[in-house]
Length: 108
Image 1 (cartoon, rainbow, N blue to C red):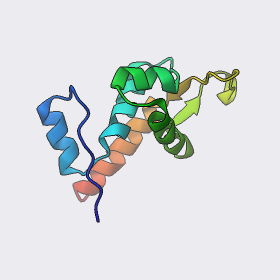
Image 2 (image 1 turned 45 degrees about the vertical axis):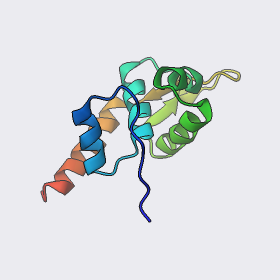
Image 3 (image 1 turned 90 degrees about the vertical axis):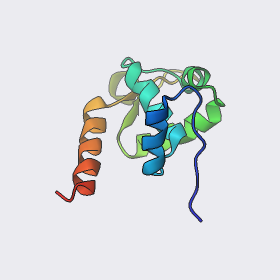
Image 4 (image 1 turned 135 degrees about the vertical axis):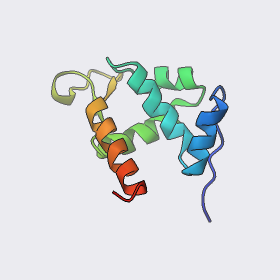
């Protein structure tokens, strides 16, 4: 059975509609967008506060994105500093993945 994701509050209707068309995980989209808006990176707790969810939900998505190479722990070569880890999104990789997906959808 397909999983239906509930919309994140505050999304413009057209964005919610677009995410729905592709059955996109709205929480993961919100995490990606938040990290993209904070290019120096941030902690899962701060991301969670901004998008209004529990930090554990954000952490689960961050780990998936990290495994796919879209997100890395901040610092020198992914250095982690104590309990607070700043995660940084690779905007070039994000664009690349978006273009690959659109090219596939367009049959290119």
